[in-house]
View 1: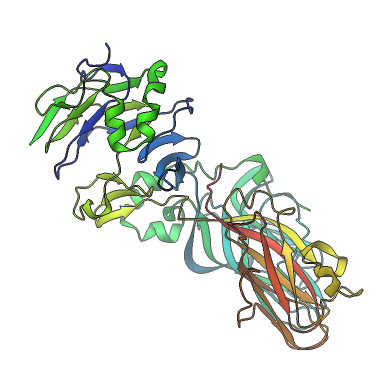
View 2: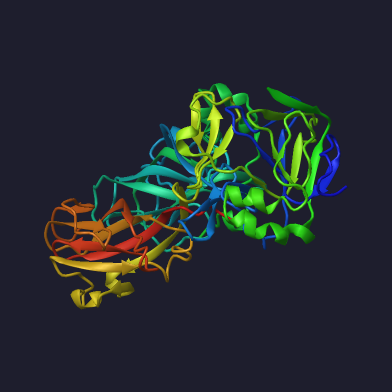
Length: 260
Length: 268
């Protein structure tokens, strides 16, 4: 088979670039397969060829498209953003995932229940791990509001999701009897405790005694359907998107949360 | 009229040894591509005739349909890329059939959806938001951080920034790959401490005038307060620096922890 030979349906055809041109309102090429995929772009390691504008090519992060930069200039290639390579903020109904003052507010704690005193305050040096399971899956991060109350003196709290305590603060207070809040953007990670692995967690470290409340308002996810509240009200919740594995946020070793 | 080719699978595998011959034609645009691939047979009017490999096939006003494949075999498999020659924007149909894919010279990709044309997000114009492990990029109490324009001259020995001064905090040595990832803004936890009277902080892009807004307010002496702030940091296109400015209205120590990014470059 060589250039100029007919393209044979159902066969492997090897040639140089083949162009199909048309000028009417109909699509130049229609691919129809009601049993499976209609088009596959087979990855190649050959990058010496500078593609023309409109070229779609697979790469390690998904799919790229080539475009013109300006007249007389070489073409440029950009990534198409997808659920395989990017995250989007998705709001969720505000959900209290931690309130050290109440039993219900402690229900999601998978570590740190012993770091709460009889008044419902976190003790100094408290480390809490909060299970976000049921609210989201494979979240890269979250938006939340963290609140300190019943403060006994100056202190701070840190919200984070991966690795050891990062040496930063999320909320600060400077006196006793204060009630203060701050916005939170934090990674989510995974955590092992008592032989069980929890895939979506976030941690709070508290430097000095205070009641701590964490209200989640949104998540960073590859697809809105990864957020339970979104999936529940979406007609497409039964689609392949909803069942897709979280390739972009698959838990890597560096995403493990570590007790300080 | 649409010509149909029924079959199970069509797999077009370009011969790499010949690919260089196409380079000049492909790089020069649609017309040049057509000219560059006609070594065997110049442009061919082929409506109703076989599609010939390695040449331009001109079907006139007709489309071509391939039907076939299966659950695992795509109707058409191409190694390794497919080019959809850009369509002038004013000729993109607003009522294109579901599944239609169109490209433009600007690199936009349209997919016809159930509610009309939809544009795929690309790293050329869209962005992604990402949480990162928090990084302390400024702590004036410890003279920690990289200040541009000799900004440390405004910080006294108690670690307070003088009132009415603006410091510019460079991020590149604390948060990696900001420039290469096309970072436009960062999220940071901004904290003020060691206050001496009421005041406020304003964060902004250092390339632009200070806005009449505030990012964090404090009401008296000896307070320690924090707020989550998003601020533009891109100094592009003329510089690879990524930095943000903080205006401090009255003397106070300032701490900044970066916890998220808005970038154009997807994750690897």
